[in-house]
Image 1 (cartoon, rainbow, N blue to C red):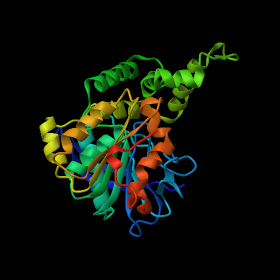
Image 2: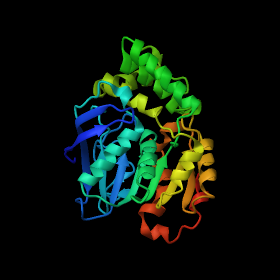
Image 3: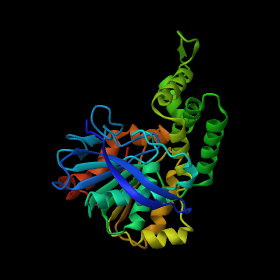
Image 4: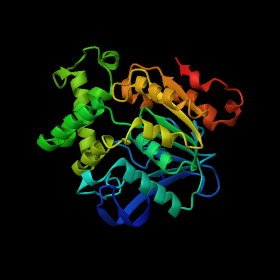
Length: 335
């Protein structure tokens, strides 16, 4: 496991005008030493952190030795979102923070580490939204950006779900546990639940196995996630936005690197149809933008489950031998 390292952002002002002093920015590096190999920046999801690979890495099915994102060929870098609690730091006034601020902090971290070029930025869900913001702020930074199961905007549906989460976090006697139980119902699909449980019973607990599974997820997150951190991360989801679609497209079209959008056909959180709409709107403005889709019954969480498909989609980017053989990426849909 890589040790957590720390940087400090001496002085920063949020988009709302709040000044923060000596903000800690922690990170982990896996694989090749910084400065010796191409850098892959991983921006983590809502309940994720900088520990992206290795025995306890939350994306170890995709990243690691001899995996799709090969730690024997790349330097893997991941920052913790300040306030996610993984490094012990929390932000009290979390509603002052937006994805824009997080993107600026990550860009400052790259500057402090003297990284002027990133081979690939990759992030799922919230992490992908942060990646979009970083790329429009520094359009020459990334050779490739890969936002997965995410979009540049927070839709009404996403905002509604985050509002329900907020109500639970503020009103429940067991807030993190109960919020997580609710969240798992929109990260998956009815078909996923049917395949996994099929109305089976947990005889020991005298409840359905789907209930036992939901309660287990609530208990597990409660043990490792602090309430203030969960409030911040849930809030960040609804701050993914630009002034208008026209403003976004104008900025996104200036990104010099390749853009690879990945949707999930059953995603009920970030709808694949909306990601396709982003692709269709951006494609006339920028030649090197592509779209691929994961086919899965598992919904939003498929980017943490369908590793074989995700590897098949991403190999053209991370495996040079495959790049020379693949010509139809934008139409790829691995069944």
